[in-house]
Length: 114
Image (tube, rainbow, N blue to C red):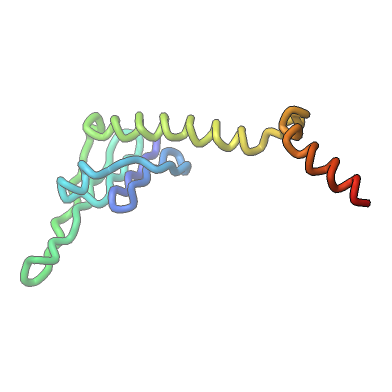
């Protein structure tokens, strides 16, 4: 599984599919990006702009992704919601005559005037 967590943008990408996920906790840990490549990865830390000169810690190589799996779980939940919403948008619904009942009196008045 290939995962990129873009904490700064609150997005998680799993196998090239991106969905919005709350990454505030990672930002609190000064983490900008987490990259995972099946069995290893890297943590990219935020630049400390208050330091003189500004300083960005080196990337940290990791071999345990378990700390970041909750973000993948959130991604799965958001993916399901986004997929359902997309399906709803793409589904054409048959018109319901009851939806037009309120328009009927207005149409009748228009027809009487012509």
